[in-house]
Length: 150
Length: 374
Figure 1 (tube, rainbow over the protein chains, first blue to last red):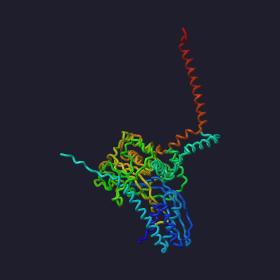
Figure 2 (cartoon, each protein chain N blue to C red; figure 1 turned 60 degrees about the vertical axis):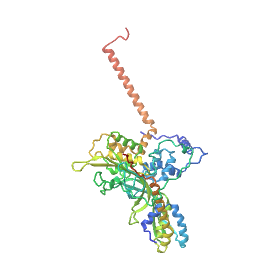
Figure 3 (cartoon, helix red, strand yellow; figure 1 turned 90 degrees about the vertical axis):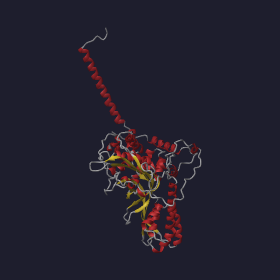
C-alpha cells in the first residue's frame, strides 16, 4: 500500500468530515491495542485565516476576507508531536488530524493507519467528489444547431 | 455632543425579552434549527458570510437566526464576532481555476472546454410562486449523469481563448496586497484594496451602482465572460510544515467581466476586464462587483469620470453595510442636549429675525407715511 505523504494526509483529513474520521478512529484504536495516550500541547484553538484571491483569477493577490480556522498540536506519551489544521471551529477534528500526524511518525502503526483510516477516507472523499461532478454534469448544456430546410 | 443618559434599563430588558419571544414565534411549532438554516436557506447564509467578510456557514446561519432574518443585522453580528478571533494564518491565493465546478457559464463563448454547466440556478425559472411548496410537496433528489467518472477540467476561459491577445491579461507582479482590516483605507486606493472593500460591500448597493453604469453613468459595455461557482481548496503556510497545507475547502463565486476596449499609442486596443469574487453562491454580487471594479478603473484607463460608480472614494467609503447602518442608526441615540442647543439657537435666530423685521417696518413707516385707513 502506497504511503500517504504528510501533506496529502493533512489534506485528506481536513476534507473528510469529523464524523467519518471519528468512526474509523475507534476501529483503528481497537486494532492498535497499545494505542498511545496523548495530550494537547497547543490548543485546540480557533482563530482565522485571511484568504487571498487573485485579480482576474491570475493577477495580483488581494485580500478576499477571513475564514474560521482551528489548529491543534498533540504529544504522544513518548514525546512524538503531531499537528493538525482544519477550516471551521471543530476542536475535535483538529485534534484528530494532529493525532494522526503523530501516529503516522511511528513506522509500526503506519500500515494500520493507512488501511483503517486513510484509504477508506480517500475512497469516501473520491466518491463524494464523483457524485458532485455527476450532479453538475447533469446540468451541462448540450447545444445543437437547427438545420434549416431548403 | 453626547451625554450619558441613565434610566430605561428595565424597559430595555423587557424589550429584548419581547424580541426573543417574537423571534421564537408560535411555541406550538418546532423551533427553527441553525442547521436547517444552513441547509435550506443557504443563499442567505452565503450573503451574510460574504458581507461580514468571515467564512463560517454555521455562525452565519446562527447570526441569521438571531437577527430574525434581518440580513444587515446578521452581517453586523458576524462581523462583530470576527473581531474576537486571532489571525492564525494567511492563505495562499485561492486557485479558482482548479475549482470543483457546480456552475460555470460563459455568455461570450458557446463551446468551451468543460462545457456550460448550469448548476443549481434560479435562471430560467418562471418566477411563478410555487404553491406546491406551500403544501409541502416531496422534492425529488437531484439528477446525476452516471457516465461521468471524474469532473472534466474547466480552465479559465479568458486565459484559454486569448491566443490573439484580444483580452487584457491579469499577471501577478508579486506585489504584496494591502489589507484594509490592518491599515485604514487611504485614497487613491490601489485595485487590490478596492477589491477587498468591494468583496465585503453590500450587494444591493453594488447592484445599484453596477446597474447605473449599464444605464449610461460611466458605461463600459460589459459581457459576462465567465461565471463560476464551486468549491475551492484553501492552502496555508504554517511553520511546522515545509510545504503549504490544505485545511479544507470553501464555496466561492467568481465573475470575469469582459468590457470594451482600452489601448494607447503603444498598446493595441484590447478588451479590458472587471473582476468579482465572493464567498458562497453569490452570483449577482460578483457580477455587480465586476461592473463596479471595472468602473473604478476609469482613471487608470484614461476614461472620463462622469458617473458616480467611477468615483472611488464615493463608492468605497459607502459600500460597507456595517459602517452605513451604524452611522444611520446612531441617529436613534439620545441627542437631547444636541437638539436642545439647536432649539435655543433657532429661538434666538427667530427673535433676531422678528426684531429686524420690526425695525424694517418702522423704517418704512417713517420714510413714506401711508395712512393705514382712509
